[in-house]
Image (tube, rainbow, N blue to C red):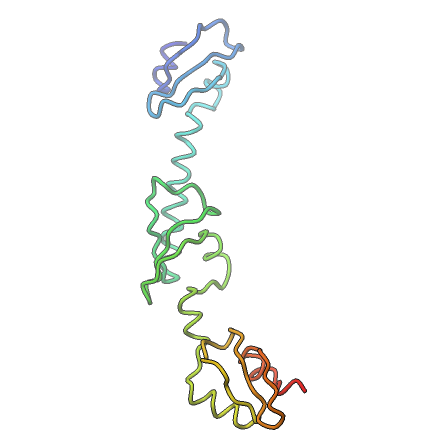
Length: 178
């Protein structure tokens, strides 16, 4: 019994009584302590749960790193700190170089886009905005940020000032709310 435990990389911390009675063991690799019976160890559960989880995570990390590379992202969280696909990790977008924390599952399983690039893509040149607003008799009252940020506009006909997004005016065809 003690030979098998040594081969399986465990140190016995309590007295061995029988093969069906749990004993306290310590993994010689990581120091994790468990309670297990001789039967459990000899019939398949031969590894330290902590070490085997670490191995699974390492395999998952390598697979995710490759998938992310194909999508144009680099995972900067080291393998040792990686605790799973649904936990936030540090990412870098290879196109713009921006760094941020996000769970790998969000990037891989959806049409996820870098927040910075998404913000830039939603910017419309100021000249185009002014032309669009002229056709609707509206003028910009405060500086334009992007298409999705609420901005103050003024109707040139009735002088009403209201706040809305440029996206609402442009894509939904809305004008003066009066």
